[in-house]
Amino acid sequence: MRARYWIIAIAIAVPLAVAAFPVMVFGYDEVARGDRIARNVYVEDVSLGGLTEDEAHEAVSGLEARLVAAPAEFTVNGTAVVLQPADVGLEVDSQALVAEAFEQRQTDSLFSDFTEWLRGWRSEIHLDVPVSVDAEALDDVLGAWDREVIDQPAYEGAVLISSGRAAPEYPRAGLRIDRDTALERVTASVAVLERPRAELPLTDLDPLLTPTDIDAAVDAANDLIDTPVVLVDEMTGLRTVLRTKQLAEAVSSEIMVNSPTSLTVRLDEAVLLEQLDPVLGSFEVAPIDATFELVEELGMVRVIPAVPGSTVDRVQLAAAITMAATGSGRVAIPRIRGAEAEFTTEMAQAMRPLTKVSEFTTKHPCCKNRVINIQTLADQVAGAIVWPGDTFSINEHAGKRTTAKGYVRDGAIINGELYCCDSPINIGGGTSQFATTFYNAVFFGCYEDVEHQPHSIYFSRYPYVREATLGWPKPDVIFRNDSDAIVLIDTSYTGGSITVSFFGNNGGRECTSERSGNTITRVMAHPDGSETRESWSWGYRSPKKKTPPTTTTTVPVDTTVPVDTTVPVDTTVPAETTTTVPAETTTTVPPETTTTVPPETTTTTAAPSG
Image (cartoon, rainbow, N blue to C red):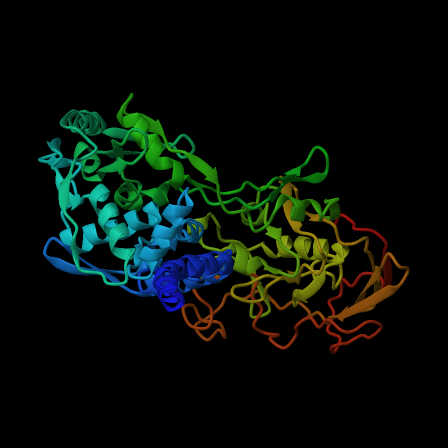
């Protein structure tokens, strides 16, 4: 009986134990699993079962990196294209994926949990990867494929120019990748590691403009080219015309992608400037340097301000022409400030005060031919301006004295003799009086004497030694403006006198004249109290008896002396030239004086009239 009892007990206990074992294991798993994902949960080929939340996120991150690195292939219009997921900003929603993994095999009842636990031993759960792409980045990629693979964009239409008139070219539809479908298929493709090539379908691409838009643009274009445009320059008084043919050549149209999209018509600036380039230069106004004007009644020189240049405003020109083309057909050329003057108003004003520095007058009998010559030369020199550092030569400035310039014949010194008047050398006779007057203005203006030569014969109407003769091309009177301001030369005359005046600013120097025998000394007093002395010596010849020149003269016409040569010319004393010597020194030449020598010693303390 006892043995049978045990057999029955074992028979009952074993099935109960077998039944209780899974329950015991389930209970153990439930306790042991804690915050871990259920068994046999996968995403792609990555097992998430048994992982904690942090471990699951790490595993998903690794999967995301693999998805981003794997290219995806598609077919567009029969052509294979490759997408790099990184180019469209592929991302995996790790939070959502891990949360979904934790929800697997969990129910609201113990029995259901046990059932799912039992199912987990023999079946796998595979989760989809929640991915997203950047729609704008994808649109850029699809746009590139539109251009490179399809190359059938919508044509928005245009304005054509034919025979000088505008005509329409109407819009046409194109082809593009269907964006909505492409987004779905790309997203699905990049969400898996095994990526079969997907087809991206095409759809029509409608133009943004309508035929009505094109017709309006054509009307606007014809308004631009119907009437010639006259460009008038108010500054120069010049004008030029753009013909309708030229306007038609300059018409261009452009699609403006705004809201809404429109087709604008304009005159192309580059084309207009190219058409006008041959004439625009004539509308340029060069800058004018500051200059000077003598105000005789005030005894001073006035600064006339500089004027900047003016140039065509090329930026505004096209807009001005367009406005004229749709309006009156006439437009003033727009201008902007051009180049500045090299010699500015400020530079000129820095030279002030510009007042009379020196003046010298010599007298002569009225109404002789020589007076005509003196006054003609004076008129040529009047108003000349000598800039700081420059030299001024009477011969270089006035040129050769000729009958064409108004000079006449008068007495001259030829071969040491006074002779008048049938020789070509006599043309311009008497201008040495102007040279003497001019030289004395240089002398008392304290400017640097570069070159002068006294007469070979003394004339009592001139200061002894302090005088100069003039010929062509030599002798000459030349001085250098060694001041920091301009020298303005003024001349005036009456029937019996000639006057030369220098206006400027010599820095405050004052000059006086001293004479001892055949030597003239210029005493120059400087503002700092110092003094400079310069001496010139000269020996005059006695006048020869007047005899007409013969064919044996040393200055034959048309050989050594050109025809119409200005006088006086003295070829008998070629070696007797003026010498400027350093301060406190004197150079002399052998004395050859006339019998009408003035007193041996004189001192002139101011610029005299003589």
